[in-house]
Image (cartoon, rainbow, N blue to C red; front, side):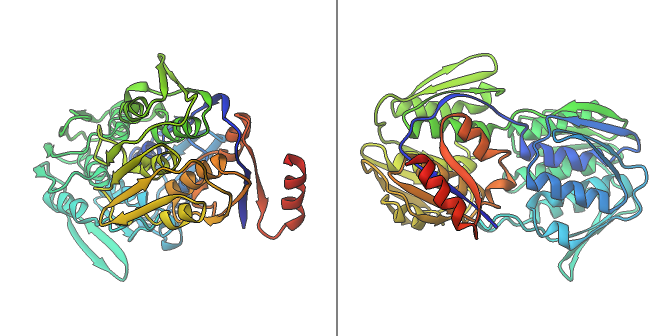
Length: 432
């Protein structure tokens, strides 16, 4: 087991390059097995969720060739099973995309109920509703979701709630269905557009991705493709907020500024300077920032995956801020850890009331989930003294080389073995 040890109090300065979008990559990897031709995927983030999904894909017989850490070739022509081993699936949430992919291609699929971060209830009823509308029979038995159909036929489907996962899964299943599927109240996130663009590059016929109505005309087969994944807006946003929290000056490269508008708007509102370029953004904060109110919403609203990181920034900003979480009901588990560092945060229902303090102090904290873990690292970068962040396996689910990228910006932090007391002492001597 490993942990981060951080000596806070230094502004982040320099340039950082953002990797491929994890959430897009998960849908794209599932889609890649829907053709018998070879697919090449570039700008793939080398993070745990991706590697677990690749293992699961390989486990059912697909050929997976890692060209390098960020490029993979996949050939799904030799898939011999449509049942995904529970050992793989319980580790990541997005494994359920294999349901839509296998159901679309083979008209049957069996996948264990998924795991991932414990940030609240994430029911799959809208996924099942979509599959059943297309003509599949879906049962949940012994912890497995079993879906099968003689044929899939396009239908008009209205999602009761906006769901990113259900939108992607129904797109996957319906692009090889017979006839046209119209999906209303669809999610509009950038990674949904990316998955649709990838499917279209394989010969699918999908129109309207990025709007709330997606129209999919089924095709008989999908072909091979070469495709590069979009930059990760959440990784980019995390570095933007880290720059602001530490009163730094960071150029965040390889981004699509349009995807970051909700984050940029809040940074500007509380007093940071944000400069946009074609494929990069620069964040500068020369003084303590102000307060604001935030409510998480589906895209293009403020992303739920940026809520904990924003709370870390607001914890050291002037005044009282209110952060309201409208997507997941269990996303404030990091508050107790922030409080250990001196933050003043009170949770009432689905809102956190944050009274900004002048500074935080280092402590031993544990990452309760992926984004909360990143938020605690930001807090550690701001805090006086040493912070140790445990359970960093959550953070490594979604951030590639997180510690190295932060070190490149001047952060004093290292990843050390949890049992290695000498490494901790050595680090403390080095940065004292």
